[in-house]
Length: 279
Image (cartoon, rainbow, N blue to C red; front, side):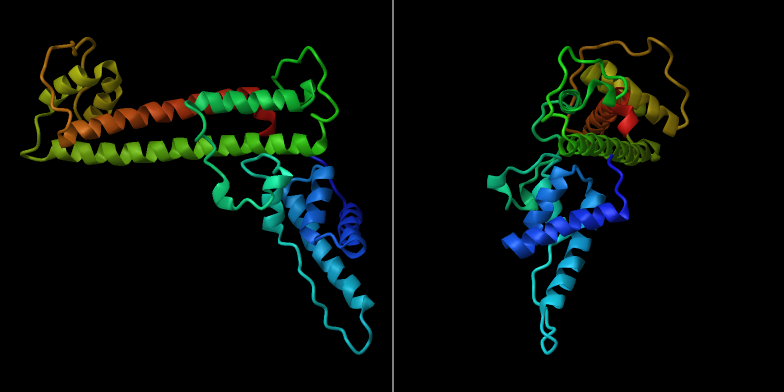
């Protein structure tokens, strides 16, 4: 990440203001150009925009006559500048610079599985950054081009990796929260005096879901303060199982949540192994 001093920000902000005053370029568009040319991160971009707004106001104020000090101009909105630079971690093409926030899709919506997304962002980082820039990534046979290693491109890749990691963490935490909530609700049903028969439920669950049901059943036993099932206690049987009962729907939901939690964890671990130094 490029470290900017106060004088650096003033110099860059002056570039933004000069383009506004001398070329009639909107402050937001000028800020986008300067930010991308210098590979600024979001916090630096916000600081640049705020300083450019202040400097533009002062410049226009100084140009006014003593009798008329009313300054009218359209300041740049830092959030709008960021939206023009980043859409889902990608630079916005000039033709789509007016895209609204609603045009941005979920980080994982275009991928059939989570690991596809993680591998994609890691591969992009490999191609866009020098081999030594991301610890743990194997060097490429050919050196990246000057364009692919520009500060703006490098910063956008870092932002994307961090966004994917944060999204994975949030999704894993959410899956874990929903799992515990659903587990407690199901265990409460079996704990009732006239609740469903847990042993019969175990047999049905194993017949329906096989080994994928075992972790959930083990957690249910723990919640109900029952001893762990002995090894080999469950045998696949030909049973007619109603998968639409309230208890069985809950089991299916729990098994899916457990699968998702593990998948998010594995993807996050892979991302940390490949790009942990910039997370």
